[in-house]
Structures are given as C-alpha cells and as structure tokens.
Length: 249
View 1 (cartoon, rainbow, N blue to C red):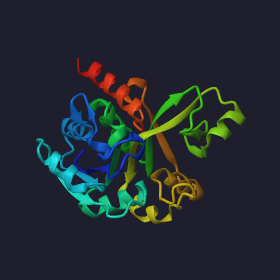
View 2: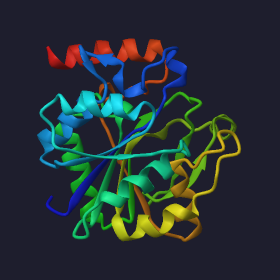
View 3: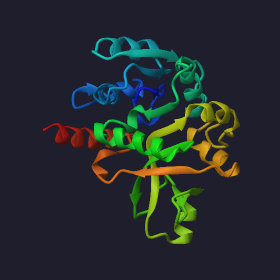
View 4: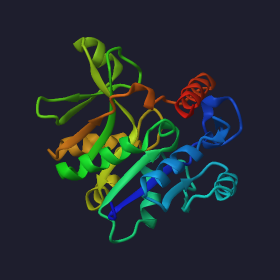
C-alpha cells in the first residue's frame, strides 16, 4: 500500500466529555485515546501519519511525540468541522499518494489491523472514489444511517425519523473511517455544505456531493461489532475502555 496516506483527525474539543482535556487525551486502557489509532497505523505499515490537531494542539502534539510513532502534525486553527479538518490535513499529503485513508481518532480505538488492511484493499479493488467503513444495526439511533441499493451503492443519507418512518429491519451506520481517491476528494471537499445545526462542514456531507454527481460510493461492513464504539460521553469512554482492555487481554 505504498500509494496510501493516512490522515488522523484529532482536533476536537470533546465538549460532551465534561472536562477541559482535548478529546484525544482522555485515557483508554491507560493510554491517551490518540495512542490507539497511531498504533493501528504503525501495525498496518502506513506511517508516517498526518495528524490534524486543533484544540490545545501543543499539548496533544507534545504527548504524541513521547511515543514511538512517525507523525507529521498540521493544525486546524479554526474549528470548522471534519471536512475542513481533512482539507487542512491534505496539505501535507505527498504528490505520489493516490488513496487517502481518513480516521476519526475517537472512532478508531478498537479497530484491528486486519480490518483496516481489508478495508483499504476493498476500496482499491472496487476503484471507488469514496468508500465508508460501516456497521450494520437493527435498532435506529440518532447517528442516522445510509440507504443502500441492491448493487451496493449509497443512494441516501437517512435521519433517525426517516429510518423509523420506513421501518427498516436493518441499516448501516458510519463508524469513522473513510477511503478516498485523492484527486476526487481534493476537488469535492469545497462542495460540502455547512450544517445548519453546528455551522460546521461535516465530512459525511461528501456523500450528498457524490450522490448529486451520480458517483458510486461504496461501503465496507465491519462484522465484529466490538470493534467500534462512538465516544461522545464519559459513559461511552468507560465502555470503550472496557472493550479495549478485553481486546488486549
């Protein structure tokens, strides 16, 4: 995977964590959260990672430099969302890179190396412009979901109310890892619309851009549900810590 580059989004404040730390510095299995996606990247053989820092950036960078990881930092000076964060990270991507693997640092704590390797291989084999790592769920959540046709194409982003209205027996949710064709994503990021709720530019907004262009967007499902937990609260952190400790034992 010589032509693959990794961008780790680690700029968030973690407002709902009820503390003053950057989100990526809360601990899981006695390590700061950011340690785990960087260790994953090292195991996969995709160093150096490009890490986009933001909130209390120097503190995050100083701690990461204390570990044995090859990292290039770039700072998101304004918190304008994950799409903007990726655009900042892309500034450090080498010209010979053809595929961009994007990891949300808080979503990547539990992924196993083989999951990421297979995800990237799948994306490249399908020659997709964009591929999203997903989990299949039976119960609706406020995360929303992707509506997928019989050919595996993402055709719609569904809200919680849409899922309930259609009474879907199962649906796929995004879980914080994306693969993009570099040339394609560089040109499409500016087309993502600002969220009316957060006033930021969310990276999943790229799905709407792709659908409007009638571009194939693929998904790769994680079979093992214990490889992902959204971490947005102290309770989520505690559960992710439990699962990580079990994974390491």
